[in-house]
Length: 110
Image (cartoon, rainbow, N blue to C red):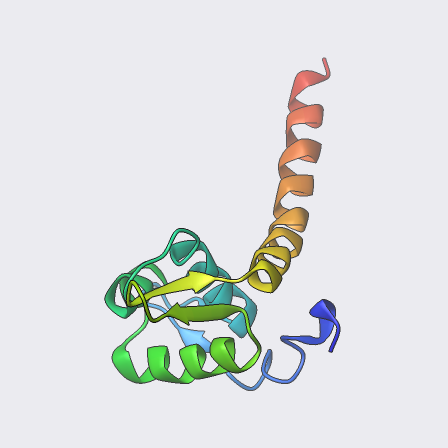
């Protein structure tokens, strides 16, 4: 499965409404989970950083583990972002970085 296809199945079907009434798709949620688990952490930290309740965490964690985006390290009992997850996170952040570059170029011109 190609990295670009990872979120295709769930993107529109699993929107989560946040406190500010903004809907987030799976790419936003899994992206937050991957960032939280970059250096290893417990489920609670992932849940808090991704702003999920426990039921949502279980669903998205199952999805992330199945797609090998996050792994569980049995020696430290921590969840970590895999190399595949890091690639997905990098590709997820690229459009945001491009927008920042465009905005800084616009502001720097007289």
